[in-house]
Image 1 (cartoon, rainbow, N blue to C red):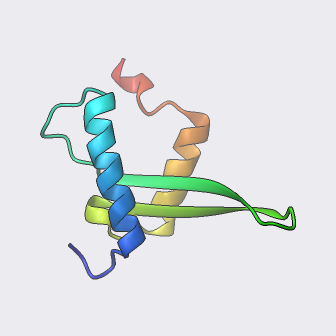
Image 2 (image 1 turned 90 degrees about the vertical axis):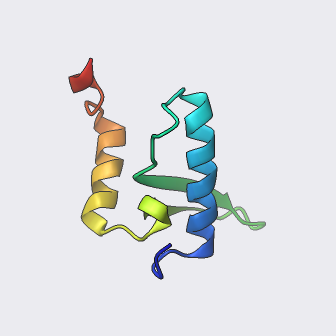
Length: 84
């Protein structure tokens, strides 16, 4: 594991790797290469905000261009369409 991985990112990465391997019926040798999680928060005063956490292989930090690419692809689609 890299020094750039934080404990929260490490736990998210492990949970995604374990879950996706089962739910999406990926081959056992599939490895999670990158991810982005966006969460909405609500405090007791009713204030709301978004936060994001992202990671690459082994929950390492990813550059902003990669994070933005994941978010763009999630909104605009097309990544898997080329494979169909």
